[in-house]
Image 1: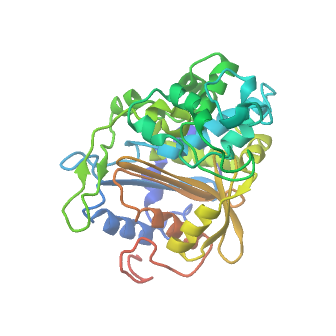
Image 2: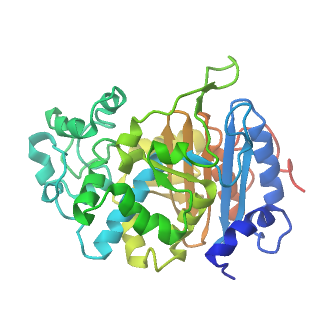
Image 3: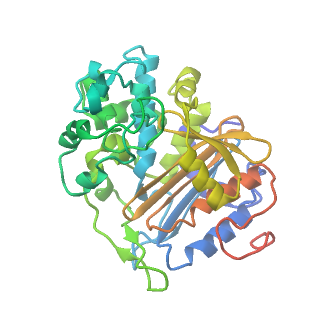
Length: 395
């Protein structure tokens, strides 16, 4: 059974309770108990989690507070999505490509952008290369200049001074400033502001009522989470930070805000459940892997013991094989000062998990693995590092 979009907000709390007929794959009682335990740790300020179970938004709940001493986090509390924004930008490009308004094989130089690459590489680098981080320059090139207040367009122009580390298209080196040239491409093609183009093509059609781009969108939300970072091990509760414009100035790379409810609706659309918004053709364009990501695979193997393998990058999305069965999962993680974000789903099973939190703790990443392990009926593992057994939290 598919629920109409306007019914979902009323159902979120109801479906979160264990025993509901819709929630059969995931043990929501255990999940809720473990999330409650995780959120009680002082390094976690606020946390919001949603699960899509066989296509239905079956769990969406907030834990902790928007700020120390502040109001409780709910499913409508807005967080920064950080690098999940890259998938939003890629989705807009894929929609435009499906409409034949551009081609991902078009060179960047075809459009009015400020991106200049070593040895005139902007004439050879394609939109596909930008969206899969295959520009041949060092990772996170000149992010520090962005953090020092430089104009993003000027930084993109200055990338031409770098020495290539590989030919364009040959290696994966993650970018922020260069990636944001995609916002310039979208503005050139649509002749509208990037934020407006994304709102009209993605946010509104999916029904994402809290989603926005830019700092004002975050701070004008009815409920929004303030950023916090660790003080250091054993040195007390997290330290509150001030929201700054650094990565909002590269909106295609890190400019999106939204609630866990809206992130869940966005995930459902990328599972192919809103074909009028994202067609199979559009999703295939987005989710087809382009390049193996050695560093990502090493990181995942180190932290999650081979649970995911064959880590590859598509267009603004990561693609993995999950578990011994090699189930294909699609996802991404995000981090910007004081905020973290996570999305992981199996588009063939219409099942996945989304997570937002306002601290620098990495432990909530384990939520995604615990949910997907349950979805695949795999043995329990304490990925949240709570020091508990498989039976802990069951109802």
